[in-house]
Structures are given as C-alpha cells and as structure tokens.
Amino acid sequence: MALFLPCSSNSLVTTNNSNKKKTQNNPESRAAAATQVAAAAMSTDGLSNAFSVLDLDVDDHQSQTPIITTDKISRKGKKPSETTVVKEDTKPSIKPDTLGLRSHPTTSEEYRMPLVWIDLEMTGLSIEIDRILEIACIITDGNLEKSVEGPDLVINQTKECLDNMGEWCKEHHAASGLTDRVLNSTITEREAEKQVMEFVKKHVGYNSALLAGNSIYVDFQYLKKYMPELASLFSHVVVDVSSVKALCCRWFPRDNKKAPSKENKHRAMDDIRESIRELRYYKQNIFKARSKK
Image 1 (cartoon, rainbow, N blue to C red):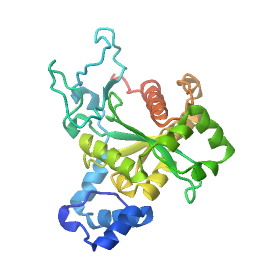
Image 2: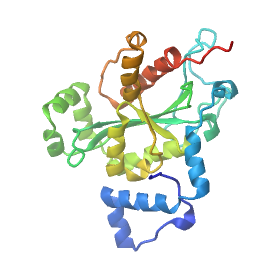
Image 3: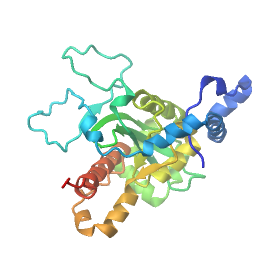
C-alpha cells in the first residue's frame, strides 16, 4: 500500500548537476524521484500520522474557532450554514492589518482534517498525450465551514497541442475563453506546480490532507504524471464528490433531487466551488447527525 509522506532533509537523494537538471525538466523522472523520496520517509510514526486523517470527530464543529474575515457580508445576516471564505493574498508582501482582522489563517491547525480541492482543465482524457491547461485550488476544513481560495492558473501550451484536442474540448474551451488564455499565458506546468505546492504547505503543511473534487481520481492521475511533487503531498485516500452523488442517487433519491444544480462553466475555480457546494448539501441534508434521545 503506497502512501505519499513528507521526507526529512537527511533522506534527500543528491545527484550531479546534469542529472538534476534533467530530472527537473522531465515529469516522468520527477515522478519517480518523488515516489522514491516518499518511500524513504515511511516509518511507524509516519504511518500513524497518515492514517490519523481518517479519524472521525463528530464534535469537531464544536471545537473550531471561526475565522473573522474582512468580507463585506454582514455577520448579522449570515446563516450558520454559510462558509467563511478567505481569499488568498497573492502579493509577495502582506499589508498591515489596520482593522485587527485576519485576512487568512496563519497556522495549519485552523484547518482541522483539511480537504485540498483541486480541479484541472485538460486537452482531453488520454493521459499519455493530453496536457494540463488550467489548475485551481481551494482548501477547506473537514466540516466545509471554513475555506481559503488559492492559485487559479492558466498554463501555456502550444497551438499544435490545442489543435489536437477533440471536438468537445475545442468547443467548450473556446466558449469559456480558456483556449485564448492558454496561448497568451507564460506560466509553465512546473511553475504552476510550485505555486500550488507553496499554497498547500502554507495552510496545511504536511498534514496528509485529502485531495477532493469531482471525479478527482482523474485529476490525481494527471498530477502524478505532470506535477509529481505536488501529488506526493497527498494521501492515497481521496474524497470524490462524484462517488458520493452516485450513492445518494441510489440510497436517497428524493433528497438527491434537491441537490444544487451545476452551471458547468468548465473553468477550474468555478468547478471547485460547485463541488464544495454540492458536498456541503449532502452533508447538511443527507449525512445528518442523529439527534440525541
């Protein structure tokens, strides 16, 4: 059973400069290196930490402290079910907090049992030939009550790569404006990987956070191939909203009919927001806590 775990500094493998350069520019080589380093870091304590993310804490919501944000939404009119959203400051320097309010969490403990939501837009579903066009990330706590939005990045790919897309991708990516943005982007897959990694490490560190999303196993496979170091941050366990929906359709068909509809904009950040909204509905209306007698 493979687990992706952080490694200590004394377990790093050193190579000569030419091999290092080759590895950094080759997704397959970096995938192998990331797997080797993760395997070297496995220990009894490490396994214990990795499996701790599966523990269920029914009183978790009672122990969490809400984050006060600078959102313009009135606290008086806010419903208990609404999520506290914190937008990530992408600027290198942080402005002084003159109001005494936190614009983002400062420690990973503020996101207990975190879920790292990632969505990719690709040129297709054939992992051997298709490439990543866009990646976005949001982190929530395990109860879906707090969240922070991270990078939303369009990745440059060649016109030849885009011309080889299937008709469905050509139509939808052109309609959403993604095709033009890809051609005008200067961000590489490697640069996008680094930015998302920094965001995840900043907010959850090496907490063995679970990767979440709709049909997330597909995105996970692309991360393993083209962004292996980012993929190595996550447990082998994923939270797939599509699977939850499939079960709710079969077990709770009446409740499932009331699930929020999707706009299907086919843009990474929009798709993540819809996935979180959908899972929150299932949590509040189907996965209800039993009342104490």
